[in-house]
Length: 134
Image (cartoon, rainbow, N blue to C red; front, side, top):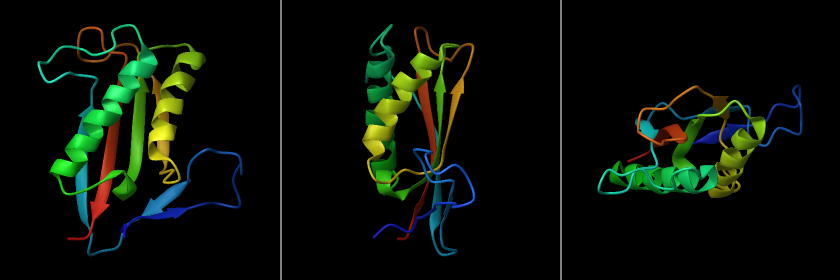
């Protein structure tokens, strides 16, 4: 059972595809993950030029980092999705991949268009914080 409680505000826009807030109990261990990048095991950038493919690789790597920390997607308290683009359609493409991966666990999230990301050819990065009861 997850330690995270998603909070849906009835005072804010009801059509948002994510919870507006989340809480974790005082006895939960917080896991702060570095931004998951679309990197293959050899360090090369996956899905060059393909935002959806890069977002999927970021989620795959995020799941691995979560598992290594004893957590899973349902333990995520919040995310930040960064897309190296000023085109809202590109942001939407990345968001749909991330949103689908999280399914019903629609943790609070921020979606940002940025100028550039750290790795050559990188278009997407996904940051997360999780809470786990050991």
